[in-house]
Image (cartoon, rainbow, N blue to C red; front, side, top):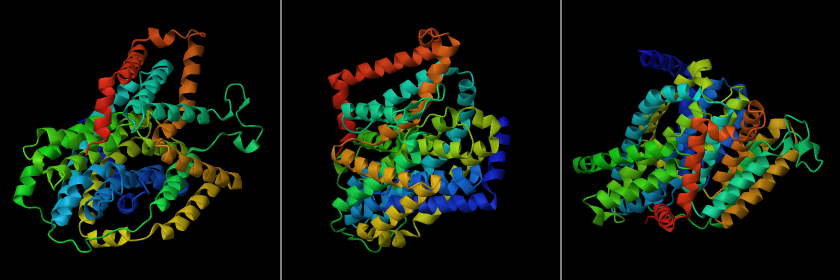
Length: 500
């Protein structure tokens, strides 16, 4: 009964004209961002954070969420039409989707991608509504020790599940933690790592880091590979899938949704890992495995369902625990802090309209995306042809204006440019920036909770091991680290991210 009443509250919040308008705007922007390769939802949300200052909290979160899951839809369009994934999570979709397009089945591939994404989004919206409240109730019983251990487990999991080298991911986590320490210590009022620069007294803003690493850095890297984009398909026809397509897509969509729902909750997992995992699973269980890589519809349905499920399920730890599962969720937490809302389990009780309005808006947004995407295919195809040399100056100016508007400080713009260069260098070194941002967001929170735990225990560090929940999470973190050292696990992990 409580669930029904809460959903009614959510519909009452989400269906207001202003929230519907911004949900539509978020979905449209997200799709457009997904269509343009290289400019992901993290960079877009970072650029739009200053604009949320003047919005009501619920409206701002609904728009930002729409950008995130809308990008999962848009990424499949370029993956299928031009073999150029707009999103990392759409890399696997390109393997079979592009082959279908070359065989004249582009419309059917796009339709299956949209339908499987909508199904996964609907299921995950229900799962969030069912499981988020009980999890939030459990989290309300957490003390400082439990929160510290939970964040340690989250960071270790993000290292294990990050793309590329484990050593690179560990180094990025440590660098993120160190960057989070810059500024004035809250307890002692002593400045740390500021190099006597007054501009760093309040620390480095996460918007600056995110815009630099994910915005400027990514665009610089894309300029390097500008080349020419071969848009071989200028007109898409036959958007209705056949009965055989639907029959072959049902089981992969169900499996992809289930796998994405589980992996989406894990820190560092999310949409990308879910899509790779779903494709690998289908290659092993499908009766048509010989068609994979040659235009198998299962190779489109499963990863598209998985990446959308993974994207939406990552909202559970963000809404209930205040723990970001990926960089976009870290930015969402930043947006909540900007609005004066403390992320965590108290959001459900103290900000019930925001909590339930956001959940209901996800289903409404997925319905909007289903209606929007297929009729606008022609426009998305035109967008793909826009050269980066035209987009680059506009994005840089927009980023600079957004960063400057935070504190009206030139220093922030220079700092963003520095992080842009650093982000480009990391990309060349195959160092994924996502663990850095997670460490940067969680570092100050971990320090605060650790200090609180030690103050309560009068300086006794064993409090982390004597409290059952805290000890369990630390043991799990140690087990994950031990798994990483096993050669068999390392090989399995490499295969999961290099499935072709």
